[in-house]
Length: 284
Image 1: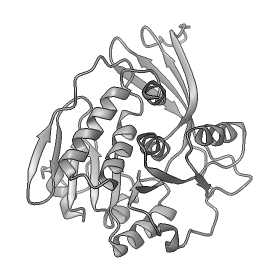
Image 2 (image 1 turned 90 degrees about the vertical axis):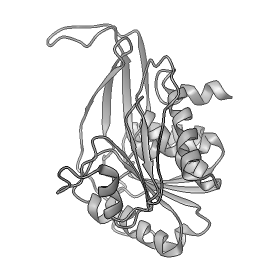
Image 3 (image 1 turned 30 degrees about the vertical axis):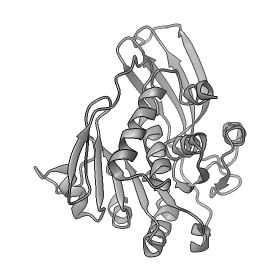
């Protein structure tokens, strides 16, 4: 099973706090963690932890945070190809405040100007790939490779957290679109989200709602499934983990409903731990 993940990497600073800090105040965290993040990166680490071979196409660039991300990817055996201009500091750095008692997370990030190396990878990089996973970022790489993958008959999965300016161009080449309840295609109006997604190209559509029901459709059938109930202390990255797990099970030959159910189980399990890696370490 081989999965190519294309999209976002970040460096995350996480704080678990008894409450959200007041403006101009000071608050001590009960837990702290720091490390690599980003939807495509977290998805790649998840799929690798579950047993898939993976590759990550992203932007890391220069700087100490980027070096830390490279080291973490090596620790979790995730090969990465960096498409950032070599001297550019392009990696977003995020601070995340989690309040376990309320089940909330607040993210503060900065978006440095992106500098993508001019040469896109050839379609031959898809040789041997069973699933392509795109998180909606890095369209310069994602769009042409998604198009080439569809032409080859290789499934393309979209993590649709929200609609972005280039989502319409990418989703036209997507087979499986798993979107959040915040995903609203322009001009949708009162249309059903699953129907709206199907109309844009994907043959499979699903909506995740955190701990709520997952609704899915393959065009001919619709269904819902309930994620497992867990004592969640940190939901950071749960959606990324869901998508990485879905790709793993899909690449392994599971049907849509079974892949969604297994992905929901893995994502729920991750919420029992702080950060996005402790669930992996607990499985070892």
